Image (cartoon, rainbow, N blue to C red; front, side, top):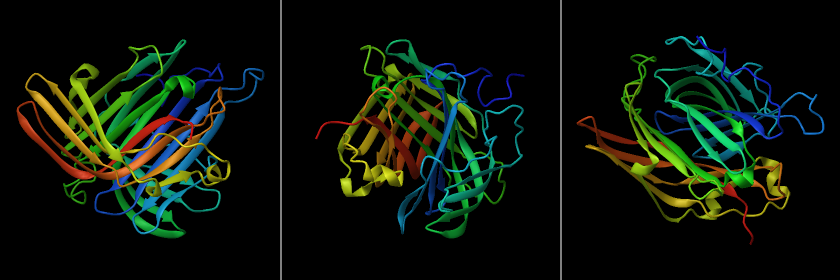
Length: 340
């Protein structure tokens, strides 16, 4: 039951109405990583008859060659894969194909869900603005990718998210998001088997009102959501700064536009959560980042989303059972541009 998805049926009737599909994958063994954002933006206020604007950006990271990105006009399917599209059976793989207009990077993957999503979460802020998101880790992806013009076969595991709402970048302020997935199990035995454990965290930090900040840490075991720590049960600490030489500005044209700098990316992120007898500590070390420069519809100051890769360790106790993860993780640090 429900809409065909991945979003409820309804026209985007405001220029700040947005819909996003987010994909992030890391190799089960050291190798390439992939991040993709597909977005739909409402029509201009003086031209409501126009169709919504669709954009897509694809990022790939290879440890040997670094980051490679499409522009915001990456080729995407008319109906992109989403685990939130109904009906969506388990144990059935379906394609996701994205391609830079230049041919590289590109991906031709078969995606398959192995778990269940979290409940939908909403953050209201600013002047009648809001952000609603829902995430699902443990998505498997096998197939081919093209990085630096070279084709290779991959076996990836990662995360899918849908985001919708109405917001402008300055009022959104910033966020911290990320995930770590235990990919130690042998995927060749059963490609539909969910990872033993997954952790997803979010922290939304709008500019106002003062109590608008919200966040969560969610823990999955074998594809099932087992614990949801709310914002009041979290502590977030950052340490140091990622060397700016390890931050690449994307898409490629952004570096030619005199884009103002943003706040530094933290080198280390530690999140602790506790509720009753359950507790968890997540420790993420940033190794490299790609800064996606997003144009703002209400300001001349761009807003940036940093896609950050690095090793992550998780330790805790959930439902009386210990939890440990050692894996590569993906973190996003987002915020507006600052003065020099």
